[in-house]
Image (cartoon, rainbow, N blue to C red; front, side, top):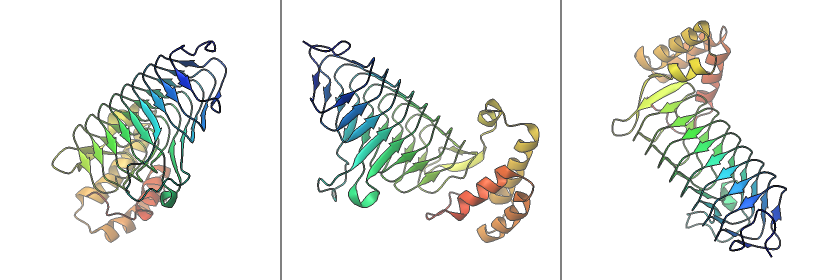
Length: 261
């Protein structure tokens, strides 16, 4: 007889660790090496493969494929993991792959995300907290996403790119360089910066003084005509008076890919 909350037609490996109050829908398969935290619900026809750790109070809808092997020809079955935090909503047909041995060994998804239908998160991605990925948004391997980032529908992020906190990527934009915090990217072939994410920042409590400092930094970086090294020197001066500009400058200084400009 199936345990309470686990449908009789679900297949759960005996080694899987299932928390209190977990529900698992019909025809869902939970493999070995999977841990599911208290209060999480998993819909019908899902595939949860391990090693995968899923936290508390997540809502995983039908047909999601979580913890599958990475889509990387170099992967040879080495130990690689997926870690998902708490209170995430993961909608229908979303796919999230485990890491690779030579890519850090783990894919990480933080807390409080909305991953909508057909989102794909590839191997070794690192995603912060509180993001919204709209339908069909796609992360290639090794992408880093900061907190409170919004990816609009059909946005695509190239492998190894970094998206800073509070950035907004418009519908259909393809990103092939690092996007600093607070920046709004619009679709035009590969995405181009089109200002800062003003409405999103206001919703998150950024006051007029903070917004003004970020706008000055954006103008310095994208509208002044200065070369990148010149712009960085100017940003260093602005950063002495603004923690937000300092955060943006630190992001730029850590970039290993070309900055999206």
